[in-house]
Image (cartoon, rainbow, N blue to C red; front, top):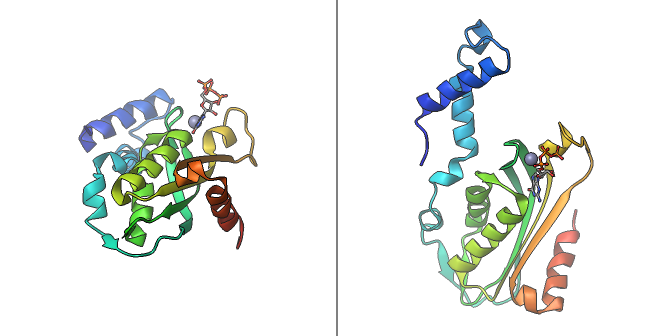
Length: 189
Ligand SMILES: Nc1nc2c(ncn2[C@@H]2O[C@H](COP(=O)(O)OP(=O)(O)OP(=O)(O)O)[C@@H](O)[C@H]2O)c(=O)[nH]1
Ligand SMILES: [Zn+2]
C-alpha cells in the first residue's frame, strides 16, 4: 500500500522542520513534493508485479548451456538507514527448454532493488524470481555493492564492497558449474 503523494510530502515537510530548517523558505518550498516523488520512484518496485513485468517474454529454445548477463547496474535503498546502496548484479542460468527475454533480467533486478532492502535478501529474491519464471536447471546471482550508510556516515569506509551470491539448482550442486560462472564474470573487466 502506498501513501498518496500529498501525505508523503506533508511528512517530508515535518522532517525538514525536524532538521531545524524552515520549509517555508523559498529554496525549500517545493522540496517536500520533490522528495516525495523521488522516494516514490526509488521504491517503485512495490508497485510492480513479476508476471506483468515478464510479459510472457519466455521463449522456447534448445539452448542448454550457461547464459550469463553481467554488470547490470543496481540502485537500491538500505532498509536500515534508507540510504542508497549502489552496485552491479551478475546473473547466470542454465535454460531448460526456455529462455527469458534479455531485458527482463534487468527489469527483475530493478523490481526488487527499488524497495527498502538488505543486499542478502535482494540477491535471493532476484535468483528465486528468475527460477520461478524460467524453470531453469540452475540460477546464480552475484551482487557487489557499496553502501552509502557505511560511506557517508557511521563507520565511514569509502573502499569496502559487499559481495553476495545466491546459487540455486545446478549452481549449488556442482562446483564445476559454479566455478564456470565465477570465472566468466571475473574476466573481461
Ligand atoms: N548485512 C547487511 N547489513 C546492512 C546492509 N545495509 C546496511 N547494513 C548494516 O545494518 C546495520 C545496522 O546496525 P545498527 O547498529 O542497528 O545501526 P547503526 O547504529 O546505524 O549502525 P552503524 O552503521 O554501525 O553506525 C549496520 O551494521 C549496517 O552496516 C545490508 O544490505 N546487509
Ligand atoms: Zn544502511
